[in-house]
Image 1: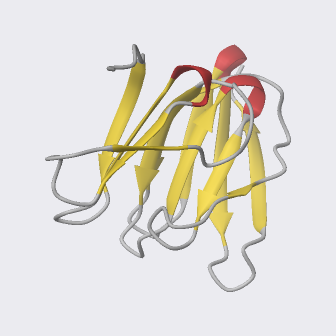
Image 2: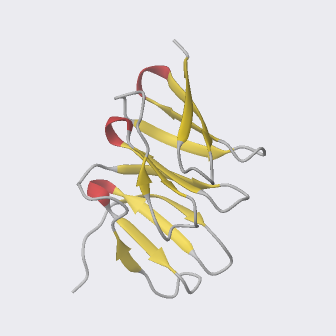
Image 3: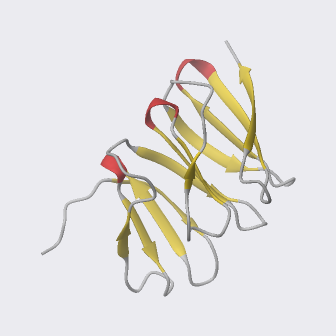
Length: 130
């Protein structure tokens, strides 16, 4: 049976690997350039995953409801939830040329995320644009 899923964003992780994210914790991964997809759940729960991005180093970030930030240091193989300094929902994320991530959300929230591949800890600088 085909499941009804609301997807909100997708990203190409490599020539063959793709990730799509969406409502209620929906995650879909393809390892064959989109020919087939399998459901993945980066973390337990049903918060919306609103956007995703990948940097040149292969790190992936998903942002979502209630300040949700998920980080994968290995192209989507494993995930860790990053402690977020905000509770505002985040709706967009992009990678910078330096490998950092910038996310934006409700209330003029803008986050600049500097993620350490070695420690998998995040130093998050909160910039509020109001």
